[in-house]
Image (tube, rainbow, N blue to C red; front, side, top):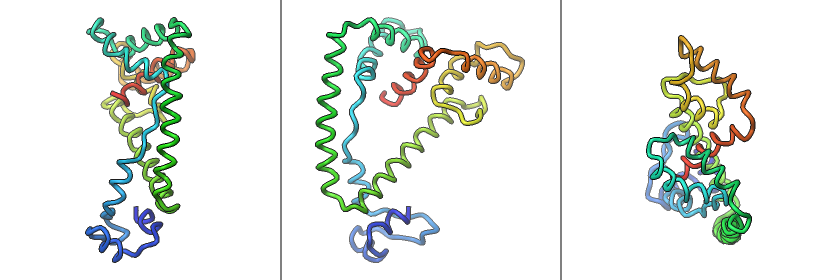
Amino acid sequence: MWGVLSALGRSGAELCTGCGSRLRSPFSFVYLPRWFSSVLASCPKKPISSYLRFSKEQLPIFKAQNPDAKTTELIRRIAQRWRELPDSKKKIYQDAYRAEWQVYKEEISRFKEQLTPSQIMSLEKEITDKHLKRKAMAKKKELTLLGKPKRPRSAYNVYVAERFQEVQGDSPQEKLKTLKENWKNLSDSEKEVSIMVVSLKCLL
């Protein structure tokens, strides 16, 4: 993070004066200036897609109607409902997404106008780092006590977690091997169910 502060073009002493925080060595913990956290928090968020908007809206309804069903099964039913939805009704969600996207573009443009080029670079790096950290934490959570396969995909993790207890195998390693082969043989539409589960969990 020291590189983030250095990119602002101010010395450590100036940063301390400007934000009232202490800065230690670049090789130890760094206290970030207050503007960084507040500006990052106010950064406009991208709108969700029309399908995710529909799924997020329908999931509580499907859960209430099927309280014992697994999330993957609910997502599969929601996906089927979306495919069967008339184009005229899909258009409502698609138009809402396009309208929010236009608002987002205008908001992000105004947001960036308030920042210097170096601040924009720093914030973009921080946002990317936070995104990668969230993905890593999600993968770790999904595979708790199951072991971590080589370069796992988030959707694959969901697939493993949902089916680990059901698959045959004398050891966790054998079960993971079987699930890995089963995953490879799934069609793209079947894998899409696990991908949608991951997307919705990030929204709930």
